[in-house]
Image (cartoon, rainbow over all chains, first blue to last red; front, side):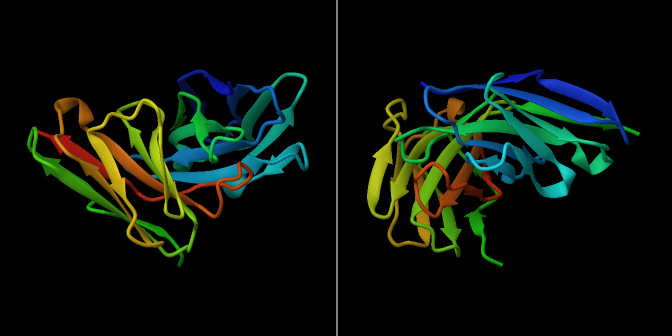
Length: 114
Length: 114
């Protein structure tokens, strides 16, 4: 079965600092991976996705993620944090042959200090 | 703009009183999903419709049911809400349930059970 682990339930950075949110996956087949962001009392918004094309994926709001098969990782980064980046971030893998079911990590709450 | 709409955004119901949550989409997507998200947790898939084909998750309680009268609308019915059903309910859509396709989420309905 596929699974996702997000290291760190809370990450705090200063405004302008590098953002690094960690995601490791487990999959017996080439994975399809997604990062979603959730602001308080809102739904999830897709930041970016990996579907076996380029290993470095660029998303919205200046975020990007790199797929590393050898490390089974798909970490999310942003060079310079903005106050508006404060939110919950979910990494997810799409189940193989399960109707597109998303398996989510437990989420990482990002705080940005002024 | 094409989008996923959920009504109401906030719903209060009494213990044991049936409640229905609504989701509509203007994306003309084939797949509609219902997720339950409890506080500080990742979303958990309850079921999905692929066109008119209903697919229930094995661990979804019988108390939860769904209807999809047409492509645009999908409803979540909770027959006898318990205190443990208080959560955010998220509707999502996808063009197809092949795993390469991302899901588009609505803003959610926050359900309170008194």
